[in-house]
Amino acid sequence: MAKMPLGYVGLGAMGLPMTANLLKAGYPVAVFDVNAKAVEAAAALGARPMPSAAAVTAASEAVLVCVPNNVIVERVFFGADGIAAGNADGKARIVIDLSSSKAVTSRRIAEAMRAAGGDFLDTPVSGGVGRARTGELAILVGGRAETLAKVRPVLETLGRNIFPVGEVGAGNLAKGLNTILSAGNVAMLAEALLVGAKHGIAPAALARAAEHSLAPGYAMEKRILPEVLGGRFQSAFKMGLMYKDVAYAAELSLEARLPLLVAGLTRDLCAAGVAAYGDDGDYVRIVNVLERWESGGNEVFGPG
Image (cartoon, rainbow, N blue to C red; front, top):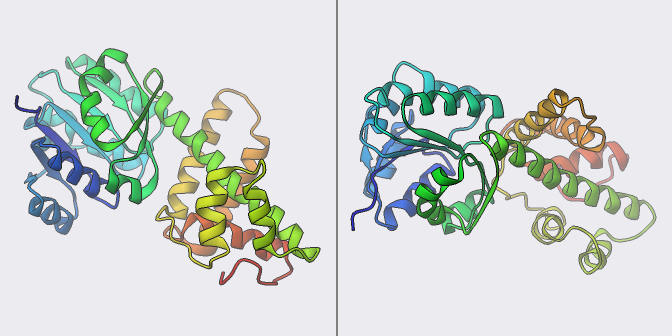
C-alpha cells in the first residue's frame, strides 16, 4: 500500500534528518528550503526538490514545517509562495508544524486550513539533533484527535513519544514550558555546584552525589556531567532558540495574568546567555553566565 505523499519545508539541522527518516520509511517527500545546499542534500537522499512552499503543498497530502521562529512560520504559510497559496485548490490537506512557534500563530493557521477544508497540528519537538537523527524525538501535539490519528504513523517515524496536550496552540505552549524546565534545571544544578565550590566541594564530587539522589536526572546525566564538567558544550541546541522558546512561554503567562517568578529569572538568564555567547552559542553555556556572576571570575566549569 502506497504511503501518503508528504511535503517538508525547512531543511535545517533538525529538518534534514527528519526528512531522511521519512524517506527511509518509504514516504515520498517533496521538499523546499531557502538554502539550496540543504535542498541538494535532501535530493541526494531521495526527496523531490520543489521551487517553493506553495509547490510543495500542491504535491502533498500533508505538509511538515520545521523553521527557526514564529516570523518564518508566518511567512512560510501566508507568504506569496507559501502553503496557503499552494492549498488554494481546496484539497483536505493537513499542515504539521514541527517548529517552536507562538500559539496565536498556530490558531491563525488552523483557522485558515479549516476554512479551506483541511486542518492543522502544532507539533513542536524536543530532543535535539541527536534524537532527530535516530527518530526518537518527543513530539507535543496540539489539535484535533481525529487529525492526529490520520498522521500518527508519520509522526511515529520521527519520534517514539507523542503527547497530545490539547487544542491547537497547546503544543507550542507545552514546548515553551518544557524548555523553561530544561533551562531551569541546568541553571539550578549549576548554581548548587558553584556554592559547593565556594565551600571547597569539588563540582564533580557534588554532581555525582546529586546524580544518585533527587536532583533532576536528565540535566545532570546529559548536560552537567559530560558537558559542563567535561568542558564540552555540544548539546546542539542554540542559545537563541532556547531564549525564544522561554520568551514565548513568558508571553503566554502574561496573557493568562499569571506571575512567572522563577521561570522569569530563567528567561532573563537565557537573555544574558544570548548577550554573552550570541544566538548560535550552546544553551548549556548559561552555566558560564552564572559562573561569571557568582564565582568572582574563578573558573569552575571550564572555558567560558
